[in-house]
Image (cartoon, rainbow, N blue to C red):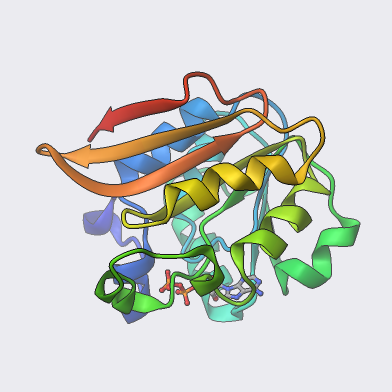
Amino acid sequence: MRYDQGIKMDEEGWFSVTPEKIAVRHAVRCGGGVVIDGFTGVGGNAIQFATMCHPVIAIDIDPRKVALAFENAKIYGVEDHIDFIVGDFFQLAPYLKGDVVFLSPPWGGPAYLTQETFTLDLLKPKNGYSLFQVAQSIAPNVIMYLPRNVDLLQVEELSWLSSPPLKVEIEENMLHGRLKSITAYFGDIAFSELSMFEL
Ligand code: ADP
């Protein structure tokens, strides 16, 4: 992150932001075409998608977050490649079409780690199943960024929501041998069933 160049964060942003290396990884893995970032926050992922030349539609319900994301995109020089929308992802969904939907939905703050297993019903503002179904109506490929203690069986079950079932790949994001978070890839962008990304 280019914090030293004035990257803008609010207090929540510090917790919610995806480490830049993981965001770069998401962009490398996302295939081609239009990426829709449903919960863009301060823009960490959207910026990396745009940097890799993917046109991005970046959505957040909070106008302050979108303003910060726009300022951050300017620092990276990619603001012209991102369409920023202030709105509710679920309300906008019927009007969106793209190639990849990227979802880094609210995990409910740092409390997610107090659960032994993070079940998909804990995702906000709607459970993971509803969220996934909405994403699928927008694009053939979906990427979900999830807590490290997420119930992996439930994540795999998401792929059964479509017929035939989507391919799914669980990628473990590791730092110094410790699991930090999970990225699930659905659709033709999924390769092996399980993979590891060393940060
Ligand atoms: P975390 O649990 O990761 O802290 P946040 O509550 O910060 O999650 O939410 C992540 C981002 O998603 C925030 O920028 C928030 O404004 C945004 N957000 C929450 N609900 C919606 C929604 N329905 N549509 C679009 N963006 C949303």
